[in-house]
Image (cartoon, rainbow, N blue to C red; front, side, top):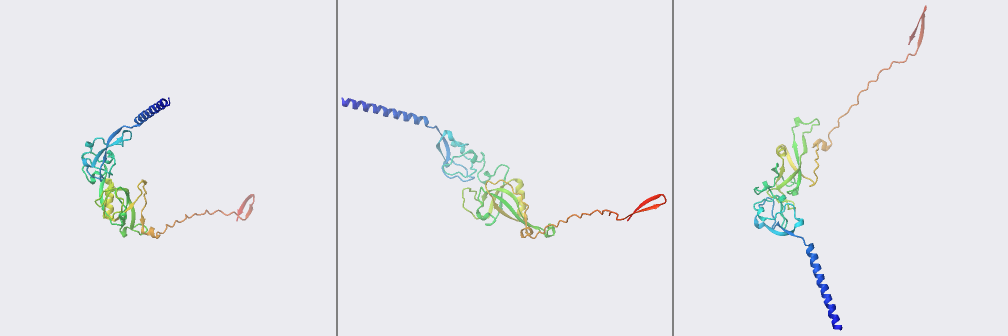
Amino acid sequence: MKNTRGIVMLGIALLLALAAVFAAVSWINGRATTTSKVAVAMVDISLGARIAPEMIRMVDWPAGALPPGAFSDPKLLGGRVARSTLQRGEPIMEGKLAPPGTQGGLSAVVANGKRAMTVRVNDVVGVAGFALPGNFVDILVNTQGDTAKAGPNGDASISKIVLERILVLAIAQDPNRDDTKPKVVNAVTLELSPEQTEKLDLARSVGTLSLVLRNQIDPDPVGTGGATKNALLGLVRPAVVRAPVVRKAVLAQEPRYKVDVIKGLERSTQQF
């Protein structure tokens, strides 16, 4: 009798265990998400490089969290050019690629309507090597004018910011944007509009150029009037403002004496 009761209890326990297993499997299958294939970089892909089939691999990615512009067909990436640096394991998205048919190199990085222009700098003018690709800089020009044509204060030299928030495309011949170490270079390539290229070309012909590193997220223009030598040293004499001359009206004085004059039947008053 005791053996029968034990066998029954064991059978009930097995049934409950099987039911728990089936319930767990059903719960897991219900929460399982579907996946899709996404192309990711198998190696580090530098800016301006042409993507080859051996540079990419397909991985499973949750279908509900696909990156915008991701590629599910590796054939669509054949011959495309990277517009920004791609790290190993990073999904390859349309926004980080140049338009189809673009040739490799720095020209693939230049935005529509922009131009790339290279200016010569030294280790100090180039912000001591801290101006890296992807940074924004202001262009400062220091020029010595004609003394005969100096301003009213007799100061012909001026230093002024002529271009603001200019994107650095490359330093020397290295467009790598992921290297955060300072590099001392002798040339910097900038992205400018056609009007800005004209200003920069004129600025480097009339004076000395300097780069001023600025905050990445600061879009506000400055619009300074420039600094002169006299203003820097405090030699500018303030203009003398003369107070207007106020002419006081001459008031007629009140008469002090009055004399009545009687001539016959006529009477008059004389004032002194």
